[in-house]
Amino acid sequence: MGNISIKTTEDIAGMRIAGRLGSEVLDYITPFVKPGVTTGELDRLCHEYMVNVQGTVPAPLNYCPPGYTPFPKAVCTSVNDVICHGIPGDKVLKNGDVLNIDVTVIKDGYHGDTSRMFFIGEPSILARRLTDVTYECMWLGISKIKPGAHLGDIGFIIQQHAEKAGYSVVREFCGHGIGKIFHEEPQVLHYGRPGTLEKLAPGMIFTVEPMINAGRREIREMNDGWTIKTKDRSLSAQWEHTVLVTETGYEVLTRSAGSPPPPAFITSGATPQPVSA
Image (cartoon, rainbow, N blue to C red; front, side):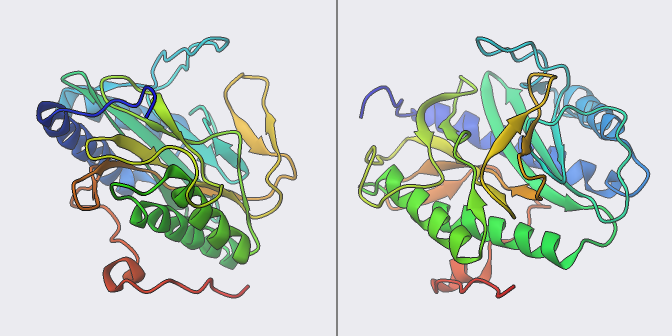
């Protein structure tokens, strides 16, 4: 099992609280996401809500992995062809844009990490379909989580569903273990082969956060050292939940009153057929 930490009962209780609070930041910001607002304003509102209302710390603010400059904002805002790690700023959102807001809060030392897609005004048919398929990918991946399953099972079903819809899976970024540390083992790839990589055990906590491109999977990094875009400028979508491996299956920790419901096939147990283009 390598260095994958198994969380204690106390850890799990702390992660449930942090996960719910992370999701509640997205509930709070939803009404503000509309044409004319800047990504910087959304960041300011999220930051104030975390600090003043929740008593949480925004984990991305000044986060600085080796080789990076510190991330300057409280949340990531990734618009249109931005795959991930978009830095909030002066960009004005306009009708037809698609936006991912990625939130990680720290509460009592525990990290709650989640992201959602938002439509600005009326999305194109392509944007809606890409967003829906990516949401299905995330939930299909989550549905494979149970003791004895392998990380490769998660990546395989995500890749299969995305590619069947004509999309591609970003490979340079992946889900990750999380707890008192923002990013820890294991790496959760969103592509792969069933029955490969680490075996899952109760008490593991990690994120499932597929990044799916409408075009090719290749990426390009912007000069700010953080922002990642699709190389071919195609749209990209991402959803993220933090998930606990339980004795019998999984528990999604980043749920709150405003969380979008799981797709119908999760509750019915049927496998979805990709929407035809």
